[in-house]
Image (cartoon, rainbow, N blue to C red; front, side):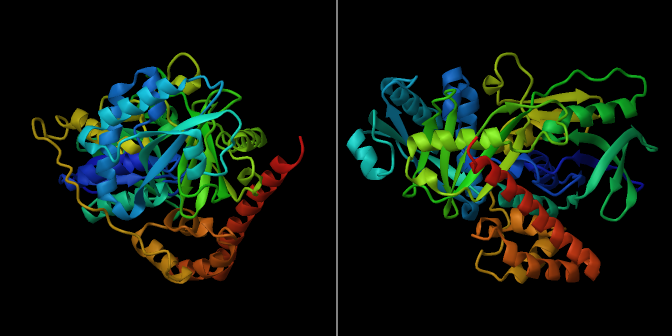
Length: 486
């Protein structure tokens, strides 16, 4: 522990915590970020891979949320042009849909208006024959036509890693595999965070002027742990979170390059088909989980996989017969609210408990707004009252190209991208997980390169490689069981 306190200790290495670290470091603050697993290992690598305003939020009157997110869609695209791509989406309308065509057109018009000058392309409306010309595999029975609009598809994990690299380039200290355990008054007037570095097997003591809890769906538990250890005997803080699990399936390419926005017949949920890196992502589900989530709370279930396959089959009967290549699952950090979990607000909230701030809720697209709001609350404590935090649109560091050998990708991931395991490289620093073999062949050379960079002995290398293959085997077994007749 340094004799000079840091300005901030940030707990949580998803896109929210990384966004706070980047903005703070770019404005000259001293920052350390603690992540108990890998960067973006939770919901930040299991999203719908979209920067979007949230067309469906218009139905619930969340106009400000949509407008802000649409402007951030453009800003983040400019930050990471190599990791984002504008994509035209087809929104088919069928006889008997809950929303009539006129209401869909009104929603798309409002979406364009809220985007303003940040709009990517105006929406359009086409007849059934034109919709089938764009996507011939769309189910034709009852098809009335379709709306067309544009959003952005992005590489969620690699964008989060780029934000981490930008934070580190401006002085932030990034600690992965490091878990915050407790907080107590610091010896020179700040707050001391006690953490465990699981990689090095040692305890860390970091003193700072303030602590930001950006742990997503685990925000309630980390807040309770930090607040109650800082002030023993204090009652547990009231819960902020109402987490929900979202599952996506990965298929071979299902469309001719368009995204699809579908309405599930079973429960009227929105289902996306998203073209990404030569495959299609299909999702998502919405299943409420406890706060804090239990150990198995983030695991996809057979029922969720079958639900997504059934809804896909109604919209794309022929392509939906393709085998599922992979399944991803993440837990959304939704704010607590009444009503159905699917109607929970996607806005964010900053809560102060003395020198501990918790940033809860929000959506990936708006991570820059969440960072600004968090630091604005801390401005007086950090000695920056009246001084705005500047966030220029300067390109983030870029990853290596996908055409590089696996060994080179692994070396770069270990040297520049904070990778510490085979899964870190295959799943979150590259697109090797989307190859036909899910990165199995590349995993061997990756493990050799990581062993050389990180000082593993042969036993450790084999264990790391086996852990990667075991996780894929478990996923394959789940998909096989889901594909069996119920």
